[in-house]
Image (cartoon, rainbow, N blue to C red):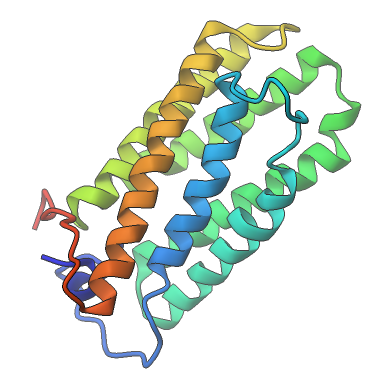
Length: 211
């Protein structure tokens, strides 16, 4: 099974007419992966010699705008799962950037951590039902949502319990989970590119768990 045949975020049961545009899923996944990697590297305390908001520009431009565009193209493909996922997480990164610029920079440390916890908790709710729906897509996409589910869960718990502390062990652990999420998303994106090209290189994405 290839992503080029099934599309990375398209359930097999849906009959999708040919839209005349390329599959936008690899772009959306790549944008999600890179921004998640930068954000998670900060949470994992890897950015000891980098600015605290290194990921902010990419939250707007790549994780935000490019992923939102991928979501809009998925609407053109009549792919309800892909359009909902990419548009929502594109909005997540744009919202994160705006929140930091407009509110987060003025918060105390305790307020900042509390706000981040609520944001992650809210998206944990969204990700939970998307995780359930991803069981009908393929194993690679399920892997993205499963690792993201764990990341959001530990981020919410970690930031709620952080108080005014700059970081905690739970936040750092969530950072490592986020790095794994990014790698899984990059792989799924690469599979979409490789399989979409139709050349010799093919990367497996696995069958859906529920058909």
